[in-house]
Image (tube, rainbow, N blue to C red):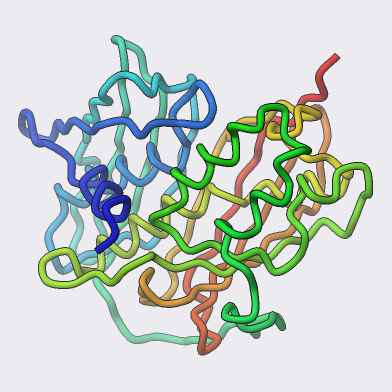
Length: 293
């Protein structure tokens, strides 16, 4: 197992410090705040720790309230809102320096049979035909506001094999395109033993879901984002629906688009498909999108 993958797994293994209170480490960030996907994933881990094993999260809704401090630990407090016969609901608040930085509500359910359909998986080239991020990112070093961004991004993504289907927004700045983006991703390693469980796959999927979701908004306006300095952005809220089981150590296609942006806020939608075409996850996020003056 790659050391950075083990670090990611350790990051999601929260320390229990009291009944329904947990503490998590912060990940070194390429920007002066905690990565939003990390906070969302850790909050979901905390919620899962308080729910019976026969119930898994089927949806979450969250708000990013303040920038997280990457140099400080985060405390997660869980409220057990309801435990029904089939469903359970939890509310989680993430706190740093005595202030709430993030809040999440998650609903859990027992698996059961019912009506089933899904929209088809969109076309995409095989992931093996695409270069991994560690080969792609250095090509754009001259476009970044700081050449050191490449090394920091590669360190942050070593645990995840991420492959862009099309040119990323920082590679097409100045040329507006269709507001749609696709990436393939999977872990750089395999989950085994106690680490191989449904909750781990769901929480790592939550972590990755915030990595490239707003790319489609940037593409619509020919913007490169914070890495090129032409846009200042941040996640505002984040919602996910978990439809079918999936493994994050097998390829998943993350297909995203943006129906609108306005008032310095961009809306992005995402769908995660397994390689055999099953729709596993739906995601919606609104992000702050400001143009520096």
